[in-house]
Length: 445
Image (cartoon, rainbow, N blue to C red; front, side, top):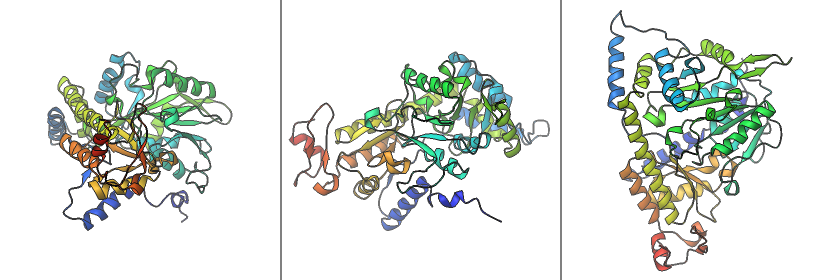
């Protein structure tokens, strides 16, 4: 047999696997070190009691012939799809029906699998930096082209995000077929305002492009001008698929459950220009390749929409958001340039003058025993940045920031760093080893 050669075009290791391997190596070399994980987006707070109770009851259902559930509907059980449609959309003034919703085993799966329903010849546009699955799944499906010397793919359009545009992608300058957008963004933590997102919807409708909208972190949005769904924008149901997850909102990273919305108005065309509903194609794909998420987990997800479930989700989200706020403020005080940390669990940061993400990763690991995710792993525009998450415990988050603030730095390791509000950039000088001592001595606190 011949292999799918697109796999051997990919880097040998997925970003988060590389980070995990480096941390394993560090632990083996430093068995007594207390490593604080601030890199991966896994959660630390437990599942809500009402969810556990619902899943216990669902387990009992499986023990009786009268209530036993075998193969479920590939699209997901109606009880969960109706709860989603009512709570996440209808009560917010959005007309999404249960028929538009497809339950899955998580957002990552659907982000990788949606490529089955659009042409292999499609031109893909992704934000740089962006979640690696967008590019990697496109390459596996044969849409990447060749890997260029700069690490980018020849057939993918990269929408560069940088400080000048607030780490938000600009509209494509050439025609594209599929656009991946994420808000709140992984990894940068930045968000689209209503006006900004409207420009993307208008662009997609004009150019007949499909937006795949990764809304996995919508529960972290508290600013009323930040949409929690792309369907809050007029016309979005004609050009966008939305993907959501219970992983970060409700701690389902180990249980695995999410959903994808494919509105009935959303269509694509064949070579002759004939239109087909994408919902029909996605339903056919799921019916062929997916047997549905577990009944027990779906009953647990349904419980999230009870008053007790909603309160538990809000409580957990508030804790993670407070962690992110604390990280943002601590890093700013320590001289980092910082994005995100507001309406998002992610903080995106760099030390001015340092352009090597892995070097910064190693510095925090070796000097503070704090892990981060190197920004370069999310794309070329991530060079020099790291991503930190608010998903650890409040105690560990504060301990990690204290360690970072007290790293001993030498002139060659970091170079220049600056403070906000037009404070002049300063260089670390011999004898000023601790960041806090620098700000004290210069009266910048």
